[in-house]
Image (cartoon, rainbow, N blue to C red):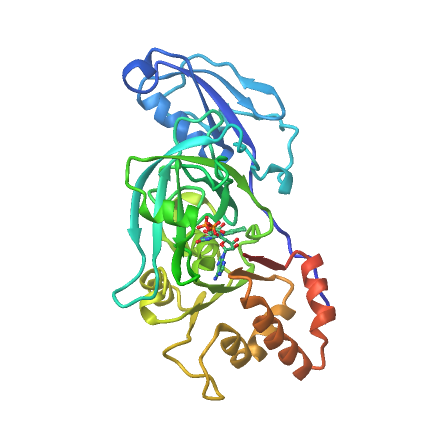
Length: 389
Ligand SMILES: Cc1cc2nc3c(=O)[nH]c(=O)nc-3n(C[C@H](O)[C@H](O)[C@H](O)COP(=O)(O)OP(=O)(O)OC[C@H]3O[C@@H](n4cnc5c(N)ncnc54)[C@H](O)[C@@H]3O)c2cc1C
């Protein structure tokens, strides 16, 4: 099989700094402020500023350092071409994906806006959806689908040192769940294990699952370029997720199928997406109702296959794991992979990798292919994306 490089990334990833007077409420309105936005939000921001009577002093393309417009007050219906008509010396590539806007030594302090359980009654463990308000930073903490952020939990470790950050995959699109462009959501499972007869709670996951709206949290990042979505609106996307590994997949699926996203993001997905989701019980499925809904609304574009290990049986009568679903659908999965527009994403606990590898090895062998040769080729072509932890 020939492996072809898929075009990875991303429409217009330029960032702009808008310097504005008389914008906002209260004391903010008196101060000159600087707002950083991605190119695709620039027009909307300028409209908001104009409608609220604000005055734009300058629009600067970040990195390029070029002031592209030091205009008087904008007209109530500014056009994007009022902004840079000359090309800014930044090309859309991985280099434009935001990375480490906030570092551990000087983290952004976000505010929790909501924290609720994603599990149904009878589920095993604890998994929460937690949202943080990111507004007010300079630069604004922004991100794209497939990235992670770091959380520094409050308190100190056993040696009296501040806790180190833990990474969490972002579960919201770049626009945030409320489409306001200044929130980020996570999907966090509380780590719990038994040691010497006692239950040990993971430091950061417990901190996050217990946190109350209004609390301040130190956030770093964003980081990660492994799990970025292809730019191609006709790409095919196979997603293999277990547990909280669903977080990046939720961002992709919202970007593809959530009505408010489709209206706003200017990315009109026309390819096919196939989600394989592994969970121990039905009550542990995460965001299941949303995915069922997308499947009903977009039957030609989205397929949703579940492996519920403690409730379903595989062909051998054992527990149904995600790799069993991969084996069952191997022929079709390989037919998809033969298409150079297909990308595969895997996310979840590290333990899922050998099972998937085994299933892919058997499926490849059935087609006379050697998976140990094929996988590195797919990886090199940026079509095989793995983030396990
Ligand atoms: C790129 C990336 C993305 C991630 N995304 C997510 C996500 O979306 N959601 C999510 O919930 N998590 C995610 N994680 C995991 C997350 O970063 C933390 O590792 C996790 O929340 C545990 O942190 P903690 O502080 O609660 O646990 P800690 O207090 O740090 O405890 C973890 C340590 O406990 C020990 N330990 C763990 N299990 C056992 C056991 N069974 N027996 C004995 N010792 C044990 C190990 O030494 C382990 O290092 C991600 C990790 C990475 C690297």
